[in-house]
Image (cartoon, rainbow, N blue to C red; front, side, top):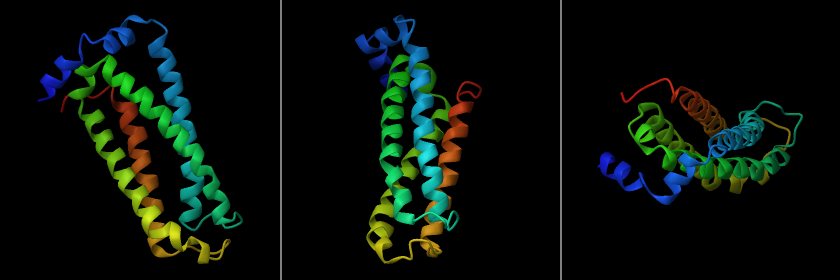
Length: 162
């Protein structure tokens, strides 16, 4: 199945464009780093506050950073798809890439849990107080998952097919 996917992508116009444009891959690397910085920078503040730290900051104010996290994620989604389409044979079989994708899916589920479970009740919290246990769980999961995504992303060039 993976080989079929790789064969379907190789030789396509977008695959050829990514591989034949000398400046594109370095530009995508830069944009991917910028996206990661926006995503993780915003989530670090939000998650630390949600975990009960940084109490001098109003918890709802920290959530104004979430649009920046979404912008960063969107940049990384576009550049990540282009990386995959540019070199599907390397990424599709790489265990680090596969684990990274699983963690991103888990991060999405954790974010959904946040928006369904916590977001509706946040207005009743003390803006500068401690947070409930479920908020701490969601925050620590988010921090751990995104640290794993960052680590696995860096390891992709160095680990093989598992």
